[in-house]
Amino acid sequence: MFISLLIIPFCKAADAPESWNKAIKNIPNIHLAIQICLNHKRIEAMPESLDDFSLLTDLDLNNNLITAIPGNLYHFKLYSLCLQSNQIEYVDPQILDQFPELLYLDLNKNPLSQENVNELKEAIEKRIGFILRAEDIGEKYKSASQNIKKAKR
Image 1 (cartoon, rainbow, N blue to C red):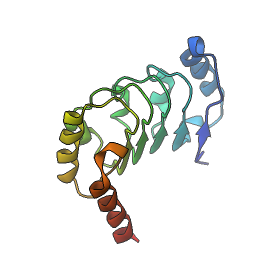
Image 2: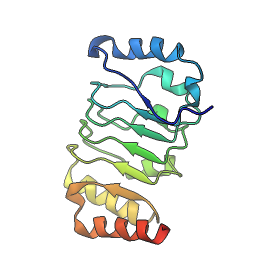
Image 3: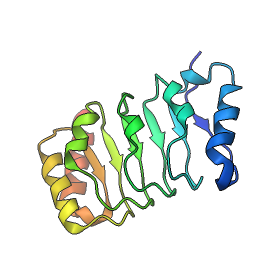
Image 4: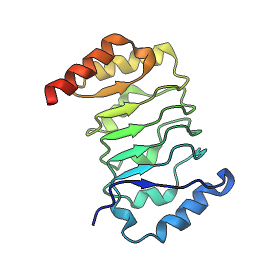
């Protein structure tokens, strides 16, 4: 039995990682979840309990306090990683190599510099099939991602 989507309910920010770790361990077959939604949880760092989710493919961390792409995500075969509206100021373009299956990365509404956005554009252009959703990247890249989606149909 796979759990296709797990939405973690609200916890107080101060004890959130500890509360999640306890709550997650008490749910039967929880390690079989493939999609997890942890948005609006005031997360600064990833809960250690997520390391047990070996089948995780989609992770939504929108609207949190994350300042960098969490290092403990690299062992997952993520197809989708949503990090919209966090506090990420820089993303090393080489990080894309750590996620070979990643098809969707949402960095919208993060304080990325234009220089960093340009570096990411170049890295993405080298990686066919990768979609980056970000308002400041421009229409050229949005239309390119739409063309990729159409080609896959």
